[in-house]
Image (tube, rainbow, N blue to C red; front, side, top):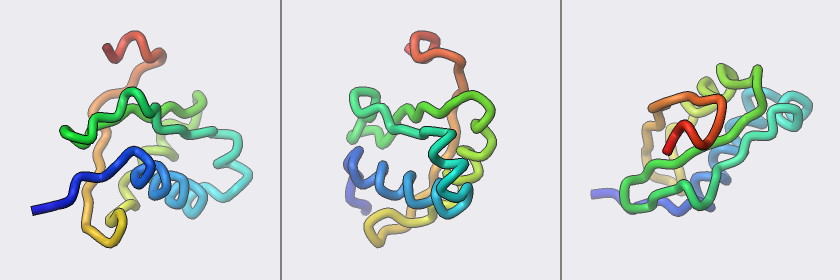
Length: 88
């Protein structure tokens, strides 16, 4: 059984992984962000926005996250869209 993660816990892991993989300069240009109102704690799914051209770097950063708050996790990309409207 696992503890459901909050958007804040996921965001902390995301930012740490992005900075570790991409470095501060590229991470600041990519501007990744977990959209809080698109995160479902129950389903453990969310939407991350990132600037165009950094999608592959973001995917790699997600793959490198293997734990959140000391618990093992596996993150995967479900879909990619040019706009948030297309994801609804």
